[in-house]
Each structure stands twice: as structure tokens, then as C-alpha cells.
Image (tube, rainbow, N blue to C red; front, side, top):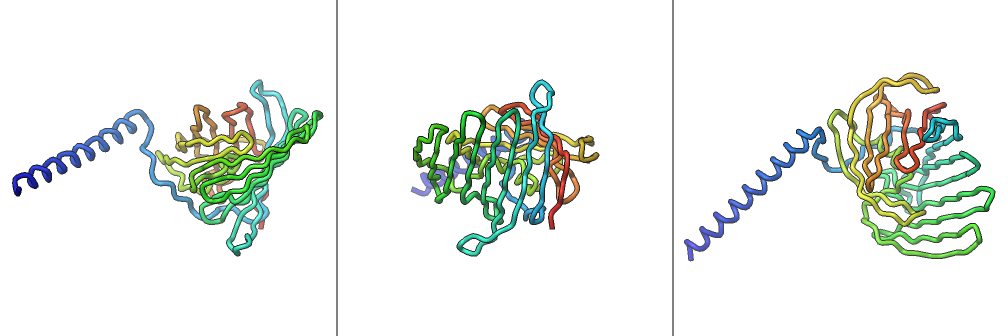
Length: 258
């Protein structure tokens, strides 16, 4: 019996050693490929202030002027008296208008609700999303005023896709930093696993001025969005290239709030 137990112990030790060796090999392989191994997702406190606003100039994939985008961050309290942030993005481009407001907890930026309204000459469509633990309840209204409801199961730690360009600013960005998080896009009912990586540093000039910035890649479901985030607090978003439509957003005006 003692020999059997010893054999089992040795087997477990060998497996444990093999697992550690495999982990070290994988980390080394990622480093050799220029891709640092992701660390656990931990957000710092929000670096922004109540009323902060970014205004961006948008150019399309061909470099032609397309419109403007505005992000506004507003402090608030929910019904449970928990501190929250309202992250609002308003885009007016090429005849379309889209406004989305996402309410997130101040601790960790998990979404509680969001509402999107998109309109053009053909009419208006809306998406109302309510986050309830491991599920999101959606109410979608089409331009033809047809309403549908849907429940989507999501991880309890999910973040909403529209908030990523802002909340990434609260990550401990540094050289070779990488992490992963889950995201949800209500208008498409799409859940993704996103890898966030700092891939370099760059000094760049945009209409709002010159900034030293971290270059951050968001790899999401086969699409890559590139962000330039200022290295000095409150770490404004200086520029980004959207992985979905390949439009470029350059900071035109920045107000730090109060």
C-alpha cells in the first residue's frame, strides 16, 4: 500500500513538474514571439473626473473627413447607493447619428445598463440592455417600429464593447503589459474575448496637441483596434483606429472635467 501511495505521489509530482515546465515554455514562447503573457485583469481607480469630454475628428478608411465623435463621462450613484459612471458616446458621421450611454460601476467598470439610439434618413432604431448577473436582457426596436426581446447569457465579469476605449485608460499600462477581458456588443448580441496589449510607445500630434502615448492593441474576435493613450494622467485617449470599420479618430478637443 505504501509503495502504491508513493507511486501515486511521484506521478502527481511528475505531472505537476510537467505542468510548470509547460507553463514556463509557453511564457517563453510568447515572449520570443514579441507577445507578453497576459496578467490577471485588475483596474485602477478611474483617472478621469466628472464631466470629462473627448471630441474626435473622424476620417474614413480612405482618409476622407467623415464626422465627429464625442465621449462624455459623468459621475453618479445607483439605486444601491454605489458610485457609478455614465459613459456616453455620440457619433455624427456620413448622415448617421448614434448615441449610446452605458452605466458602469465605478469599481471595475462592469456595465449595469446601456441604451443605444441610431438614426438616419431611413428612421431610428434602438437597443436597450439591462445587465442581470450572468445574463443581459435586450429590447430591440427596428426602424419599422418592430420590437423584439432577447436574453443573452454572458460571463458575470463582462464589459461592454463601447466602453473599452475609455476604461482601458484605467489599466496599469506599461511596457510589455497584456491582459484579457470579456466584452459584449448588445446591438449584435455578440460576446468576445479580448486581448489587450501594449505594443509600443509613440509621440504623436493630433489637432488637440502633441502627446507621448502608449500604443495599445485590442484583439477582438479576429478584429484589431489600435489605441494611443497618453502616458500622463489623466491618460486621455489621443487617437484610435476602429477594427470594425477602420475609421480613424483623432482628438480634436479635450476637457478634463471637474
